[in-house]
Length: 339
Image (cartoon, rainbow, N blue to C red):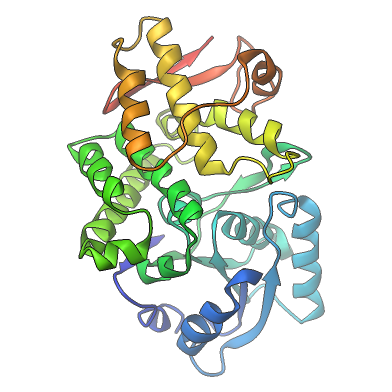
């Protein structure tokens, strides 16, 4: 698997597709203009077989949607030689990777992530999955794409809220593996909350560098533990709480709490639990709260532990002994703990 980063356009995509003869572009329906103007012109002549647009809400992230993709592929003549190019955010890449892994027992696929969250998390690492009712990613597989092509200029299409969700995943990565990058990320995100702001402030190169470092860090962890049996679990920092927060909020009138927002809240709760268990210094939770707020992230969870615990008890990462948490002890160090 090759992870590529291009700073300002999608023009470098074409050489990567030269060896494929039968390409289907599967994309988020909200990205019609980006696909039309930046993706399709970079597919080598004669190699595009068809396009499939997807609705990409959490409700759409279901096994039925995977069946619909496979049915569409079959009706349009996709074979075992076909290749799926998934263009969009994390829901899109999850669904495309899962569909490709089971269609005709597996066909080739690649990603062009267009959200910050997908670039640094969902599209990197080979996890592909969909929800089962209100439970996150219960159905899925581990299958690596042929490549993930990151065009940072696609962030220009990203709403501020979605950009903030990606910030949470970048900060999570550097809380796990710091090397001075957590402070850099906080300083940058305190100044910008969109790609346009980064460009206007002359900070797009610094943002692109942080994206590349976050991707590289996750890749290194994944290479050591692809099947998520040990070290890779650390990448779930904040997620045990976050998945419960998302599930509880899903039917709220305002559309609920987005994944990155829930991850930020979950990391704050994880720091509090770590302090309570004597695994972290007393000021860690306050530090994360202050830093996250400075970056524009929400930090206060609207649900009590009594509300969240029954949902957390069903988390797929748990063991028979109890709920598995990833708890930070300091910036740059986290622990896998079952309580």
